[in-house]
Length: 499
Ligand code: NAD
Image (tube, rainbow, N blue to C red; front, side):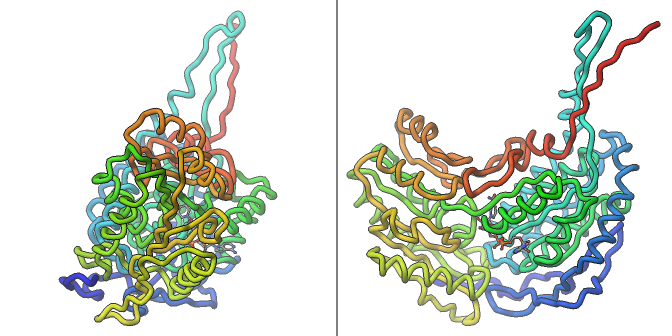
């Protein structure tokens, strides 16, 4: 399963320091606790991160608060020029970010390039903010005699975003561009496991020359996040991560009157019907399940074959999974990189053991995969289980690893019942060539993102991105028009003139 090693795991440069970026300056946190940033393919320490204590959170929020008054008065068209600048700086650095991202996270460099592209798309959409603000502000004349009425959008103040490990370059850009385009100031807190991509994104921010305090970066973990959640000068929090923490963020921040959008975990099912085009379906399903080593909130991990399609589907998926190349992310031939930590590898392995104990059959077991050059890496080869049923833990819990669970049902109704039987509602896919089946699926499946013959249904920047049930806490989602609504307050102005 190992591809030829054209590149070594060490061949891409990464930032060797993790600093905060506060008020337009790179600063080292004076906090005590440190944590190593570790390459998941080699276990090599790449850098060391200092957790930002509450007192320094106070300082960054006060800088962002101070910057707000002038930034909100900066015309929206001028604010967008900074975003056009950011787009250019990110594009110039995109290969450098992709290589560093691949090293700190483990994903393939192709996946890293795609991730950065999706992030830049959000900068492009947010750069169009003057137009998005304009649409709300149309005046209605003569709502009563000689009285005109309009609604205008205004920014609120300081917003913060807390980010997970699995998309360290894209997810900051779900929030940062919209927050500042609408006239707010912003604080980013990346995942402490993968802070290096954000260092490079903020080098781009620094090169653009945003006014001091408008865009800030702080590193840290739980204490840093909790200080943000409770800070009285923060108007709103965006969170992406696991559901337990998302709920905590939602409840804590809402208690202090903040706006909150908290995206949680996922358990995504795909259904393959008898009408599906298997030649096209199988590679698409494999990409969804095993891409990013399964560490994607939109990854399908349970695949249900309906009726007679099952045997052929299982044979083709098994053959396709066996063909995947496991290796380091920087090798262009790699399909499946390592998972993020040894603990994550162990958790995935335990879930597979539980599934077997619950009666699933282990068709492919990649847990014994060892990379000849990187024996310390957190590699797992493709795992494939069959005979998975709704009552098993593995069909309910998010796996976040390269594991495909196969289930077989008699009809689409039964499949939809299984799909809806989880606590999550992030994404789901149907593979079919029948419009009626697709329509029923879209109508009846309780998920925020539905793919029809699409295994990773990630919306473009001009659409909102969000799940349902335990996958989302809040009402306004990330991206697109929802982002504009989240970051602005609407004020009604009713006016008349006496002379
Ligand atoms: P995580 O919840 O462990 O961490 C996310 C962030 O929360 C990190 O920045 C971390 O520092 C902070 N954090 C962790 N524990 C905390 C606590 N007790 N109090 C306050 N802050 C805390 O998530 P992760 O492992 O980094 O990311 C994987 C998860 O993210 C998966 O569940 C995945 O489905 C989810 N995710 C969801 C989406 C989505 O759009 N719904 C997108 C990407 C990832």
